[in-house]
Image: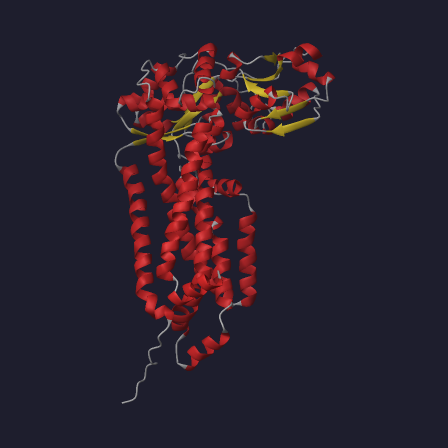
Length: 523
């Protein structure tokens, strides 16, 4: 009886098919428990998500809020500190991604509600009615904007008020991004006073002090409770035309948080309402900015429980361990999604020339979008946290995988495919037994490139509450703390090396032996 099925063709693909299946199973075994663990731990008991912006004072207030809630025992606290600027933090609480965060009355009226007439807490509460948000009682201090210059320059140029700057258009400035964008910042101030400075740079707030001290710029924006003002030789210019509104610190909170956790809310009101004046807040900021104390230590000091001397180190070790799990989760899940999407897209591009070119251009355009911008684009669609970070990271990892898959497939000798057709192999059999095995060298190179990129890009997820090593880097930038920056950057670099090494091992399973020998010979 004649055979009706094609004869068995011994190819690298068939010899390695079981190995590839084992490799895929192993990766799934790593990714799925991580995904399940992330979901399970968030559902274990009621969780309060506390946010903050990315400057020292907001970190401190956010940590104080978190510790007060933890002491009531009503819920576990998930810290989403260092979310970014006002827009991201407000969107997070408005969409329910966090439950509360420290804010300021001037920022609420000017930047969020766009109603400068709403100045008091009562007026702002009325404006927020119907949004599901409300304000706590004023914390007690007014952290308004101001402009500062070096003391020696103030004496030399006779600068005592903001109006005096109009006589010196040659001066340069470095302002924080929020200050340059908001109407209660540089745009409005410039019109109100008729200012015209020679050069205005946008700079991370914590770095503007160093730029001013080194003479790189002449004017910076400051917060009136900045800790560095306690010990730096700066002249604060008088707001002689009364431009800046009051910025009384308050908690912007979801109303459902108050109803779900009444004991926590009572504890916060009892601890914080009128509990911190201008001078005390400035001193707390100085403990972090100048004395190098950790945010948790500063918060414990305010709450009257200094804790052990090694609290900062213990907290840092715990943070690094927790954020390592976070970072692995971000990298593996987003890379896995990119592989599952990118390889089929590469195959499609190789099969259809016209569509393929359009596809490659579209994926290439994604790569030109700055990674932080791509993360922020995800917020309106998915809120903040890990989900938008995973979507953005997956999209950002596509290009090397798609292009390398495409390049590997179109580079296969056409005669091999013709022979496969003569032998009666179906298109699916040709793909799995011949084309993909012969393209595996290119495909794995693309996956390895994406993996290393993703480890680095994932640090930016911290700006939208996605976690990972970026939390430490963002916190270190805000506090001008090199040790914190290195605590996030060094493990990320080591993780990139480890992942690259692991994929070198995966190569031995996925790439046919003959191709590996060809590669080693060519090298």
